[in-house]
Length: 307
Ligand SMILES: NC(=O)C1=CN([C@@H]2O[C@H](COP(=O)(O)OP(=O)(O)OC[C@H]3O[C@@H](n4cnc5c(N)ncnc54)[C@H](OP(=O)(O)O)[C@@H]3O)[C@@H](O)[C@H]2O)C=CC1
Ligand SMILES: C[C@H]1O[C@H](OP(=O)(O)OP(=O)(O)OC[C@H]2O[C@@H](n3cnc4c(=O)[nH]c(N)nc43)[C@H](O)[C@@H]2O)[C@@H](O)[C@@H](O)C1=O
Image (cartoon, rainbow, N blue to C red; front, top):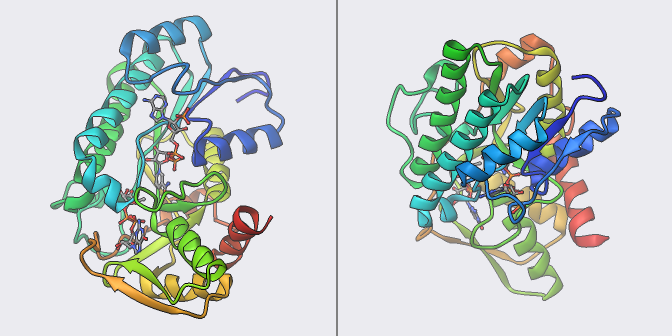
């Protein structure tokens, strides 16, 4: 990407899109095309094509999607499948039609089979049954990978796909029903401390393990790959380190300084037992994360709740 290249960040107000925008501005890029979902509903094929015809971006970061935690995925199953298929199909097809030089598509670690060997290698895709709670979202993401892969094969496009692990950071979603676990726990423990509540309710059994990457590291990886990777294979992005939800609870409780009790609501699903990313391929290309989980949670907690 040249400094004057025209760059479209789909979903620039979201946690990932905003981090990518911050990173590109830090690197000196200035020529951005940005639209909110009110300006441009990416589910609408004609509107998307008219937008690409008008703006003709050189590069696209596809960070727009319907996103949520385990409860949201398991509740709005049709919306997670329909919205994400429509957004992906429209942006990827119009990027081909209007000759975008390169597109980066954001998938997710949920694409892998529920009980795949750990750590998850890219080759494990489509080798087993998916986790029920986020199957619609996972199928949409897998379709996005395959769309990029086959537009590259048939039409000679340069569309790369990346599979990030669970993310956290500025601009995250803190809604207690629809968010992911890390922001939900930060809010629950902070509010319990402020209100001196006797206990905090956490979902599931606490036994599942999760990996977490700060979104600024993800943005750095996306920039690195947009600049240096023209391969045909999709790539995992993560830290290669995971911990149990129980351990995450203890870490967040310590950082927040909450001394009350924790109760476990096992009516809520655990989801995938583990989804640790094998990040060897990305590491071989020369990229590694830099923000540790404890440091990252401290930063996010201070920014969100203490400033
Ligand atoms: N958060 C995580 O833990 C992970 C996220 N990812 C992936 O990263 C990407 C971004 O996720 P994240 O930043 O967390 O999500 P957010 O929910 O923070 O942001 C999603 C963005 O998508 C936009 N959007 C949603 N629907 C539409 C639509 N119909 N038309 C136009 N824009 C739309 C929203 O725009 P607006 O604000 O204008 O309404 C919003 O800015 C997604 O592809 C997600 O699958 C992958 C792994 C983990
Ligand atoms: C990024 C990833 O994110 C989702 O998958 P997930 O990682 O399972 O989602 P999650 O972060 O919501 O939960 C992780 C674990 O945490 C436990 N948990 C405890 N207490 C709370 C709690 O208060 N909120 C939430 N959300 N979870 C809680 C919860 O029971 C589960 O065991 C999908 O979108 C998937 O498609 C995807 O891509």
